[in-house]
Image (cartoon, rainbow, N blue to C red; front, side, top):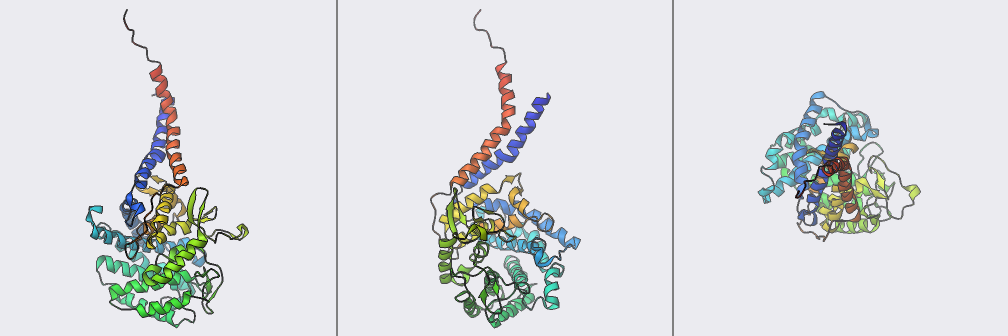
Length: 447
């Protein structure tokens, strides 16, 4: 084989691997009826199958290595992300297991059986005291019983999911202790808020913690419904921003907002609010939609800041991720889960389609964009676990507003790029093939 032929075959292979196969896979995903209805899409089931062995291996290796990050609040990706990703994964498994029980044709094996090693590894990682080094340096030895809301929220969530999935009661004493002490501390707080770190309070995290306490009732056989209703006091005026939404951060001691509401916080918190405060949740989501949802440049999605925010006041950070034309990366990624949990499939459908075509699936196991945006050392699968979490959210009542199409102009453009680049990479091979065929001697007809 000549050098030109070898080069053209290599380039053809790259085009097929990086563009043609992903394009074909995405075209199939975009035709999935679950994108427009209240069902878990096929893309989520495929992601779960591919991610599960990888997550189990990574979590076990992290535990065995004793690796921890002590960077504190300044090193969010090294401290929070390994545990947050594990909780995302466990939450996703709960939804997949419930869906499989309703329709076993969705997977050849029950998720709880297929993923048992990953479930054990994920909960062990969240509960490992070594992984708490960063919060212990802030809160001391009382880190499990004083403030430290985010870390305790993650532990309650992991223990609840683990017990739901496996039926193993080994964490019940710890779970009961955390649920009772955290709920009592939120109750006793003047504002209904607690701090994640000293001087840092994120009210949307408090919403997640309240929902986690509510979910734990099912495995503990307790009833915190009265606490949940009292806790709503922390998210009504004067504890809201000027739009009537939970602020991004606030002063827990005084219960006052220190910043306006933001998309990354709202999209995360409003996944949980339908379970605990249905009426308030509907009003908040409508308000969120009115001020943060936008159609622009062929895209739809949630902004990180309200649409009328001056550009000079807009900046990205580790929570928001990249901002594009005002759209928040985290706000729109979690927005898929929020819209699905709120039953707004008319918004979740096109938002999911945009997310899917942006993931750049390579090979059988890698979603290239989420992998690049994750922490390769401490949390390599956070992005994929977060996407799986969003894709597996379902409305509490099982009812949703279906959409007619998921194909926004952005989706069409990106799909054209996949197939256009595949053709471009194939062009050297096709040119050589055409030249070779064109030079073949023609057969003589007659004498």
